Length: 89
Image (cartoon, rainbow, N blue to C red):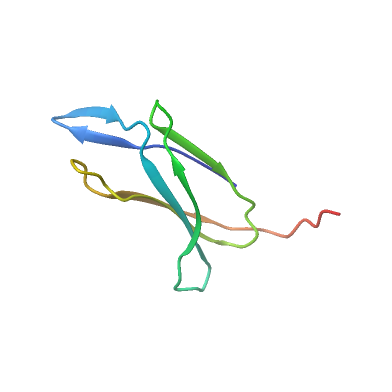
């Protein structure tokens, strides 16, 4: 699973990329009401971030920017369905 996103801030009708900001990655397995912390990453200088994680079960991935001194919190979610399982030896 790859999560790729550009975290941006809209200020006065102009978009600005947010460099070097912390983003928390969470996963909620299907049928669960509990979010699991997967990792915390930082955006690159261009505002993008990426994280590769094996998707072992269906569920919802969530990327959370917790906000900062001048920016409100923001988040994005995406549902992933895992079909079949591949076993590696």
